[in-house]
Length: 173
Image 1 (cartoon, rainbow, N blue to C red):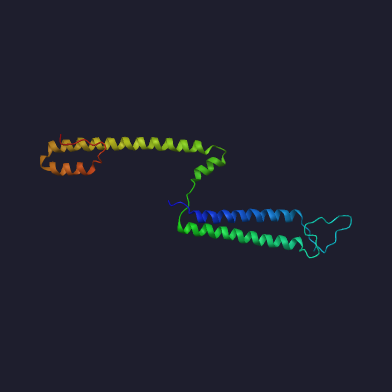
Image 2: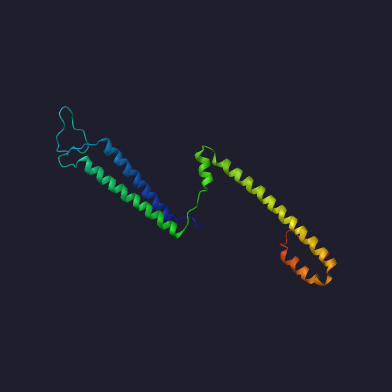
C-alpha cells in the first residue's frame, strides 16, 4: 500500500484548519447574533459594544449566511480531496473490530497484542500442519520407492518439487 503523499496531506490539513476557523467564526457570529440591520444606533437602555456597530456594517444574518456558505465550500473541497485520493490510491483501512474495541473504552494496544498472539498461534498450527505433510510426503516417497522401483525418478522429482528447503528429508536415503 503506497503512503499518502505529503502534498495531499498538507492540502487536507490546511482545509481542515480552514473548516475549524470557519466554525469558530460561526460560533462568534451566533453568540453576537443581531437580527436587525445595524444602523449605528443601539437599542434603548443598552450600549452598542458590538464589533460590527459602525454605520456600514452588515446584519448578523448576512454574515452568518456568508460563513455558512464558506463552510460548505470548505467541506466540499475536503470531500473532493478525499475522493480524488481514494481513486488514485487506497488509504490505510482501520479494522472495524479495532474501532469497536476503542469505542468500548478498551486499549488498542491490548487489541494489537491479542491479535499478534492469535496470529502466532495460527502460524504455529500452520507450521505443524506443513511439517506433518512434509513427513507424510517423505514416508510415502520412501514406501513408493520400495514398492514401485520403476517410479523412483518420478517420486524423486515430486519430492524435489515439493521440498521448500526448510525441512524435507531426502526420501531416497
